[in-house]
Image (cartoon, rainbow, N blue to C red; front, side, top):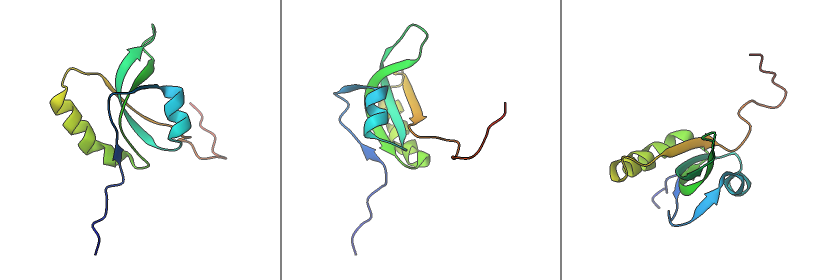
Length: 92
């Protein structure tokens, strides 16, 4: 029997990528990012990809490890797809 691999994937932190690149390369996935550049209104503009997965809960372990090694570094978690299903209207 083969050992099942975790569903999250972690990446080399040496390359900074933009949010647009991440959304293009990882559609409908949860992203854990090490922020490298913000714009003036504090929107995250670019960062180093720490991990990504279709399931948000699988980012918990990579997040905890990253925070232990880099406690003062700013991180950002977000979903690259539509959170509200098609055909559903949200009224605020």
